Length: 196
Image 1 (cartoon, rainbow, N blue to C red):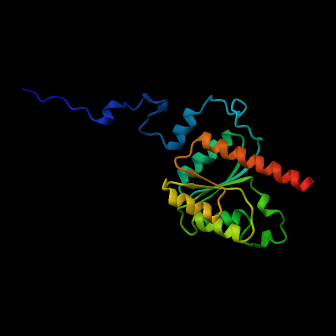
Image 2: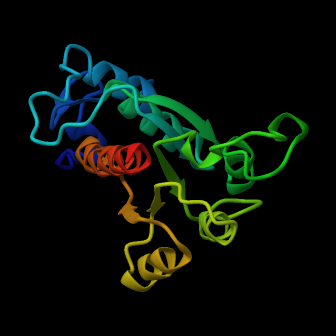
């Protein structure tokens, strides 16, 4: 008598079908999947109640290249101008917080980026230590801490170090949009205060 055929989970998802709207392919990278699934989807934020000015300057700091690139692509789709850094030390250099010959005499360095998305667990300098240094130096950058740890104590520690808000991974477009709205409101408020 022949034995019954067993079906494994991989058999339930053929490589050319879709599952929950995401293309499944054995050769697709996460970045290629993101790009293919977002083709043709409107990028305007006008269809949302969460509206902000286009062209916001954003710094994404994450040691994981895929996370960094996915966040960059989502933010670009939302109309932002995005730079990236792979750790806290590189972020401080991008922010001009670490003096270099090129940064001498620079002013308004805390206004270079409208918002900074800062991962916590990174080599060389963690997000926790990077934001603590920024605040210690009197910087008022709008910093959103990004963490894979959903424990409340860890999020509170990040807030105590000086981030303005905390997002837990995986970060989605709606969460990014909410942070951009807050950053835009803060930017406009600062500009209004300077004009007064």
